[in-house]
Length: 93
Image (cartoon, rainbow, N blue to C red):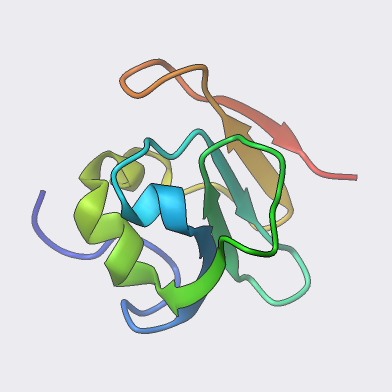
């Protein structure tokens, strides 16, 4: 994939967790409505001990398949059961 397809620049901070940076697949993505920020998580219960704030490119460069959902609207989340599986998207309340 060439180019950056997200609505935020590559160096904008996003929320993630250590396991995602260590290679676990991203299974939950949230595009927040209030500030248009993003979270890329592995689907495990959130744990402050592994939470990280990094540049979006740090996650997306490791998981280029995330470009598939770069058009996720603000205020929506996407989930999947495993890497390579289809995303299920829903509007957040």
